[in-house]
Image (cartoon, rainbow, N blue to C red; front, side, top):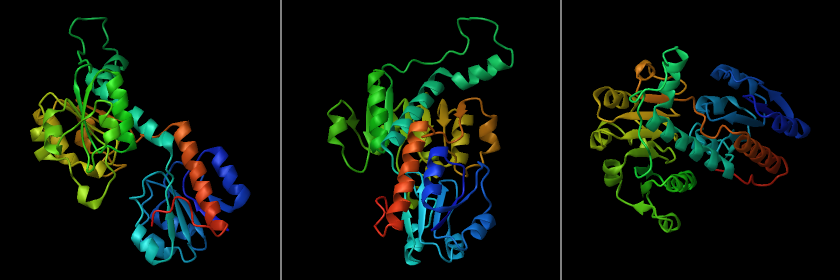
Length: 316
């Protein structure tokens, strides 16, 4: 069974794939162009791809013998899963318990970085402008006693909430469904508008769906405290990036910390020029533990298919 792997993956995982499949491996972090992916999958039965590869109808049509697409990640909004289903192609994802932990830890790091102005202070130091301790040099804010608002209380949201509680933050949340287990630990449910208005740090953790496109924009930024910070380690299109830029410029909110971008990997020039936003390159679950778990899930999905079984993480 021939499979195509479009991105560099951990060595242990590629070895496991090569032991079981005929692998065409793109051993690089430089993304393949759309035409290159189409050329490689013409006679392949399986495709392993990261979230950054957009697998649309045209690519799917180009996979004349394609039978399974194994996404290397928990999400799968980069793939047209319904069209794949129409073509008889199975799509799988790679959920990993440690992925939620890694992403929640990253989101909490963004909260700390934003509140203490760490990225700005580091740039200042690297430019040689650190002149020693001064009473008003890069003053930030403690997070103890501050309110963290979480929109989307899935595994990542719950894991983040527990870490915030350990730092003596007040945690409120909105989710489509109430979560009694996390409420029992002291997290308070509120309507979405109230979460937006009352938060000192607003962090979104919903999955992406078309109806949630731009769920956070000018209207929401105007409702937030002017002293608040916006955190996004979920999906870029959940926010209106240009309206976030305006909110940061005009002081509608104090700052932001982002791991994802609306037109990723492109980051707007205006965001790059602002000094009240922390920017990192989509590192949410970029830990050895999470990526290894995801890789093993990919291998399991492909082996299930090869052995005539329904892949355990089928999403369509």
